[in-house]
Length: 502
Image (cartoon, rainbow, N blue to C red):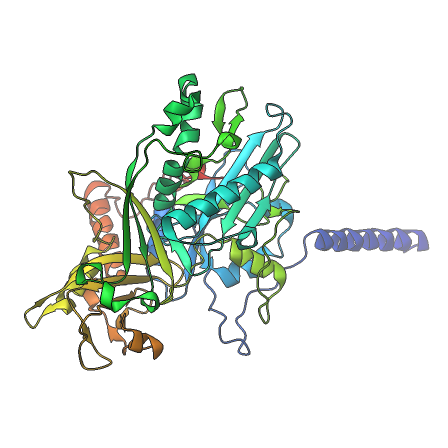
């Protein structure tokens, strides 16, 4: 072999190695997520993809870990999505290492989950020349702060609000996430009800020109019920009757013609749409069932602009050991990252009629579990009931507030005036009792855990549903042995939630 031939082969090998090195540099090999023994709080690995959102949620119900559903948007021009089930910890492990162009991820906000107050703000710059977006956001924060104080006695400031920005030269776009101290909304439907009421004057301005008349704006009448489930550390037993147990603060309000303070100028909420039409600066369409909400550091498919910390953001997360600041911003930005605690206030907002009763308030999405709880509180000639329930998706807990049943396992007898809570842990398939009594709360009392009956555990429901579907498939879509099943429907439904994204 000649020296020239050897040299050419060597140069060719060297070129291949350089190309491979360049490829690895652009797309480095990612290490696998492995929980460390040195950090016992790290969850086990769960990483599963689904074509259908409903299948992803069904799988969540069978998992022992604190898993959640996320939507991954594909860059194929069809806005198709896959649904990922994983933990916050494992998602961040891979998410932080992805190239920007691969990040098109959305948090799915379950329809019944307790969640943070959040906003999607946007307007087109060409049709809103001279609009001061930062001032508009500041005015909105002040307005919402006043209303939270007025309706729920909740204080907040810009330091409690995470501001994310993904604006372009054509469009202003920003997300606000309110990290209220010891408070969260029952679910995003209640957020929508609350915002549509307090912004009703501005909504009227977008409907017709006649609404521009201040008299028409001030004459808006709305009937509603606001409730705040307060922790009993603020309870004054001598003033609270049994019907108000569990510290429900009910206020019935009817807005009528009033002063300018009661009906502030909301013109800053009105912007021009792409075609010049009047619309709200606040997108009220993001408070719907199983809403897809874009994640921090993600972009929409086909776009390069990511959702990042705004320059004028004033919220700074508290430092946590073994966690970087970006991870804390990421966790703070997750709408359903709300943990249950005794001092957490659950804010709700329900429209009502003076003549029609409010129905469905006491029924959770799991009637079998509701029935089981009733068996615990209806005995020994005592007819207890469920006042309300709240679902915490982060820990898969259903917290039942009980009335007319005060038996406490801590003192071995019934309390004289304080009711109890039954907490059902869907993930660990057990239940336990906590108490509203100040002494029990001071002791941080929590009863021993009792197993749920097999027939009310979620894996049992899941198997029953799968069995029913199997029977239906066998009955209506029988495939003879030796033939291939029709898989053409496999991808049907992908991207069904596209219209819900922001």
